[in-house]
Image 1 (tube, rainbow, N blue to C red):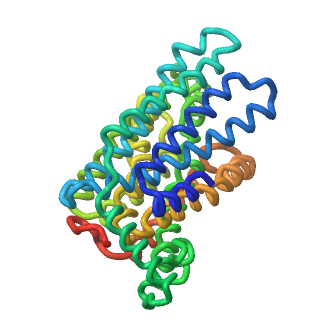
Image 2 (cartoon, rainbow, N blue to C red):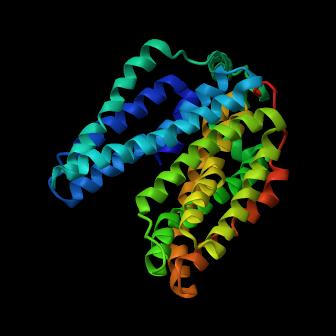
Length: 367
């Protein structure tokens, strides 16, 4: 909900303002979670924290896309998404230090969650509103004035449409959102319903083998995270080198092959550890395509809304994935078989990608 709302706000009030609001929302309610007095207060604070967290991606991705030159825009988007992986690793490291501090250690983690508020000072002082959004917003306001005075053209009326309505009423934009939504569902469901089982699967496999030392799930998670960061960065470089759609297609293929091989055939300790990193490279690293490709397919006036509709709607749909995966674990008698079945979702991405729209490598953003 936070993501979709922020996407709409970013189109009307600016990327920079919406990003600042989302950071503030996350930091405030993350800090308040530290003083939760019962289950329901914690639940409420986490819900509100989630609104802010979900709201950060859309405006941030739009700012990067709208301020970077076309030849290096893919690498910039890959670096932006790689920061997510670095943050994940950093948070894990902080928890290793904080967790031994006793029963209130989880509260200390939420206190640390206030620190992103310091980014507000940086964004306010150093981040400018993208010039393309400023120009598009100026054109929209002028169109609104003409429509109000009764002299607006059909184009003016289109410009002043509510962004969601414009996307859903335009046949080409609607088709594009539909295909991209299938691709996004592939990425999100594949990650949540298959790859998130990797640490537990590897730990159980080595623990029950009896012939090799067990692998702690934290070590597997670390390898998966390092592979993810490398995947984010590599996707950006490949997107600038060979194009967006070929890169996305290769990542889907890699995720499909590696996931099936990992869950069905890999059983040796060192192979499990190494292949966890390879899986992270493809299955988690592919998330960066949304940061790179989505902003390049929509006009500036609806870019934030369209990006967030694709990404955040897929996250809502993907919420059913782990439930289905859990049922598969029972049905097929183990994590490996269930995760392998859920990995077949990548076939959907392989089919949908060629129909996503134009290849945008090296091209200016649509106005």
